[in-house]
Amino acid sequence: MAITSTLTTSFKTELLTGVHNFTNSSGDTFKLALYTSSATLGATTTAFSTSQEASGTNYTSGGANLTNVTPSADGTTAITDFADLTFGTATVTARGCMIYNSSDSNKSVATIDFGGDKTSTAGDFTIVFPAAAASTAIIRIA
Image 1 (cartoon, rainbow, N blue to C red):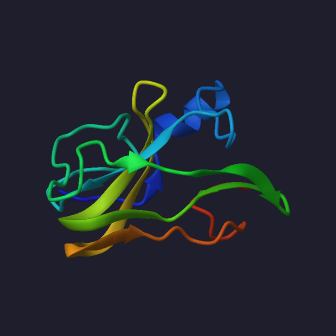
Image 2: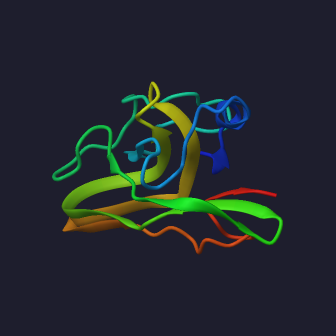
């Protein structure tokens, strides 16, 4: 089992057919779900699944809504970002996560490996997104 950090192949194709709308005020709803080290997530992942999803206190199956930042350009690279996400007072262990579009059949966007198990015990479990720039944004098209 492994989690790979990548934009999923289905997401890339769906961008070309106009499936995903990242516009902040009127776009789709994107969520982030946590997964255990037993999960297999990567380029071929097509949709959110509860299989091997993390569980714990103050973590709800399906994860939580992300606050989207409207897409922009940094030089010649299109980027979008999300506000950091905190699961407050959570007791949970996760190896990685999936970003998915809950407005459109829970279609996958990206899978992210944390590089090891991350644990919170009755504390904040926070996902910190990288800076919204051409070389660092969580979603970027060069």
